[in-house]
Length: 460
Image 1 (cartoon, helix red, strand yellow):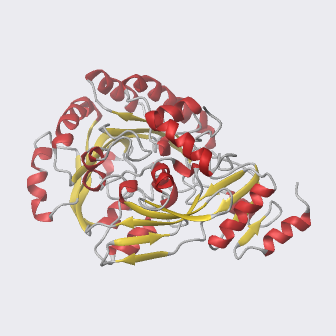
Image 2 (tube, rainbow, N blue to C red; image 1 turned 45 degrees about the horizontal axis):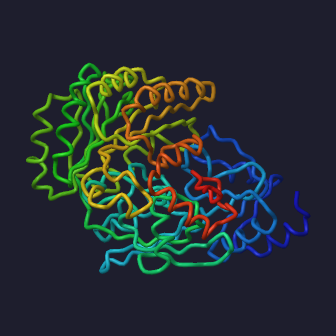
Image 3 (cartoon, helix red, strand yellow; image 1 turned 60 degrees about the vertical axis):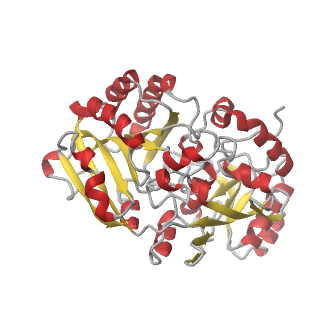
């Protein structure tokens, strides 16, 4: 409990808004994407600019407050929110500036990827991001970032040129290959451990229209499809990406009514090469087996990015677990089919995202992101709108993960982790963890920024 005068002085120092529990907009301000998370911060500072971020960091540090940093609010375990303490909310900071000649875009941390897609698409350019346009730019980037363009252009962090940051002591710094390079190394995969990024500068790529869509097969063909997929995709052109999924067909007009509610397996494709080459590229795909549903064609890249937004709005119960995969063995495929065919709710799913191609052309020690030789990033997601199904979706996701983890590379994409303990964090960063601890000790020795997949500066 802070003195009311101290809080009022803090409020007056902000251009943005300070929200307290008694305020009418408090409940709305503390909501994040995952409705499974229900936390009650003492203060929410909705920052309007960098000066507000500096003031908020200094206030939180001076008064010994627990600090959470919120960007897009998509973080699965809800680490962008806290009980008591101070939430530094960046969602008002939504500036974007595209430089079409240099093919770069500068993005503030309150933006979501749909905002970036809208701004860059006008110039025939695209950034490397994820597969849902409502995802926040900051969280996805700092964890690594993989999506439809990853095989061709690398991870999001491989296309990050520089950042502006506010450190734990309130200093404003820049980080790039040439300025504070140790910090720049650490934030590329090390999450929000080292400060608050107030702007990102990304390299863009000439991607406007892609040949993309979804193909679905009966669950009875899942084992054969996965065996074909593991052989085909790593040898396909880097311009072709496709993530495998177990899913329940939603009752949407884009799907035939006879498929509504059926559990199927499928691949969501994206070919970012010349459209005239798409028929040749998809030739081997069509030779596998006729799907029960196919919707492929040329579409604007932002349309692909937002294809699943309506299925996964804010306010659902969500629990996920991830792993990196080096090899899809026959035994692992059998286990996938066993658990994937038992989706507990219509929105629950499992995805295998390809992370080869350009990702493999960066060394494991070149950024904090260490799994540079894995072929897939796996996520098992239990989802449902009803809180009564919370334990059911958690149990399914954990059982599925427990069965497949022995066949994994040992660590996970940090953005696909819940709060799973320090051993999992160390397993994710592997040989890079010791260096991350040293950099954390340099830039945040008191672990002010600890609500994340934490790098503990006290470790030796």
